[in-house]
Amino acid sequence: MVQEVWDKVRNKLKFSLGLSVFNNWIEDIKLISIDGDRVILSVPSRFTGEYITENFSHEILDCFRIVGEAVTSVKYQVQPLKPSNQKFRGTPGRVTNISNNKSGLKPDKRYTFERFVVGDANGKAHIASWQIANDQEGNFNSLYLHGNVGLGKTHLLHAIYWMKLSRDPNLKYCLLTGQHFSDYYVAASKHGKLLEFRERLRSVDALFIDDIQLILGKKGTTQELDLTLSTLLSEGKLVVATGLLPVDEMQEFGPRIKSRLQHGFVEKLEPPNVDLRMRILRQKLTDQRGSGIDLHFGKDVLEFIAENIAGDIRKMEGALQRLIVTAGFMNCTTISLELCKEAISDLVKISEPPTVEEIMGAVAEYHDLELSELTGPKRIRNVVRARQIGIYLANELTSKSLPHIGSCFDRDRTTIIHSINKIEELMKRDKDLEYSIGKIRRDLLHG
Ligand code: ADP
Ligand code: MG
Image (cartoon, rainbow, N blue to C red; front, side, top):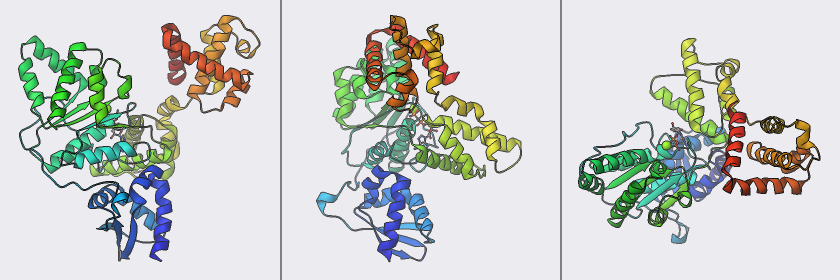
């Protein structure tokens, strides 16, 4: 009976948490019993127990309810697996104790692990962050999180900070952005205060540096960062950094910084899928309730936002904020789908991908050609190039298959693949071409 319930719950959890999170955390867990309104799970380590109860209780309880068990809390008992099966280790230990952040960024109270929703797109980054945050033995020295804007890098960086601080209120840390680092360094060298600057940075237990790409391109500053990182890491201090680019692609950074960053955890954040976007929206509404705004948006409203605003999570937050203001203005605690569509129509338009036909129109117009020339047989150089650009953008901006794009341009699959490769290749060395494509893309996406 218990096993049957657990099998059903497990199946639901695979969907709600995503497979990679499921495999990492839930796979090895068993249901011991349902004791009144409590679920008691067997977990392989205390660490796993704490992690799943703090991060996934909500989803676990939801799934139990869906299969008909009215439970309200999750408890765990540790029953270790055989050593080879263990994925994570516990974290007792010690941290140093000194003073505090004097310069830099104010940590954001909202950015905690509790409020971070985990799914496939950010699961690995989340686990790495969690491990770093809970590692009190100094097993892990550094973490570099990268990915596009609005995917949760800063949120995780602050969450690690809060967790560290809660474990050791005297932790001596410095939290800043790449821009701050550059500014402070430049000011310090100008005013003959480099020694002080170095002393201050290098005496911390933990350095949190957000948007490291903002340092790129400034030679003196990258050298200084290199020195700072090497000093901190060689002394076993903690470095957590975030950036837009993968380590390898930060060309201005020397091989030493790169190898230092690569030595620790490096994790990429991907754009969330629609399920994760829904869950994030729900979390954001819960966060709002915490600050006294008690709104209940229907599933259809949340689905509309999640389905239509992808990528940067800040855009979804913007939409939600807009609805909250609208509801406030109209003095109601909920909002209909129609009103929602109206209120955020401009935001939704931005994130709708253009159609192949729109792309063809934009490319033809940019090159001063007739639309029919893009699909026609002409082999004149500028027509061929425009056609290739159109194909390249259709592949990049829409989710249409190559045969579909082929039929729009009246070309076979080989020509389509050749065109995409050709443009990719040319853009590496032809800045003008890169600019033209960027211009057409921007016009298409932002009107
Ligand atoms: P980045 O630093 O990658 O540009 P942020 O960490 O600033 O992105 O995230 C942008 C916004 O989206 C923040 O308000 C953050 O709280 C929210 N956000 C991103 N990912 C999540 C998530 N998984 N759960 C909850 N909120 C998230
Ligand atoms: Mg950020």
